[in-house]
Length: 253
Image (cartoon, rainbow, N blue to C red; front, side):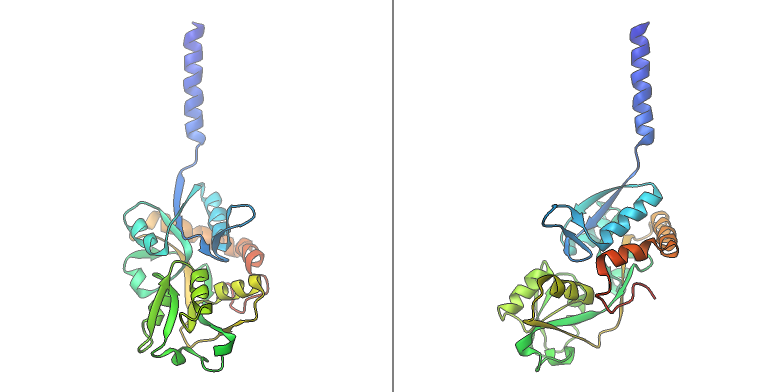
């Protein structure tokens, strides 16, 4: 009798444990894009604006998060095939991407800018000065898409902004095209005066999370939660933590 009781009790505990377990949300990210998602050098933990935002949203929605680090060019194929549920990687909404995936409401408004060596700043005042010149961009990035619209521009692609900048410092290209907050965060963290940011006439852009096309259930959940977080001020607190008063771009319009 005691043996049967113990077996029944163990089974009940297993069922209870299963009932308490949260559903898992598999989130793809490229953890080299400061300050949106990156690995903290001291703690070795995945951190950033996007990371804090999706963790907070998942908590409200009743999900456990499991991150899947991968290259930017692998994220969209991964969510399209169902290998991940969600992309959280400073992803810019573009018409080409909208054909393949569904974006949430914007979580950040930004723009693409140039980073140039200070010695070249007199000659490169906008993207128009990049015609027939070599520029550095991240693989599969919004900056890469825009660079292809510059007449005669030759692209050098790398896996991270840091690699782009190193190539520019080594005179392998005359400018880097990337998101304004990423460029400004890099300059602030390094405290360097050998490079300068150059504004462009590129259109403003929106950064958002993304899901598999047609995954309306998850998309609606995310949009409702993100809206609630904006209204409650929770998003603004996360924004202030990562951006403070450094950036000229507004959080949301």
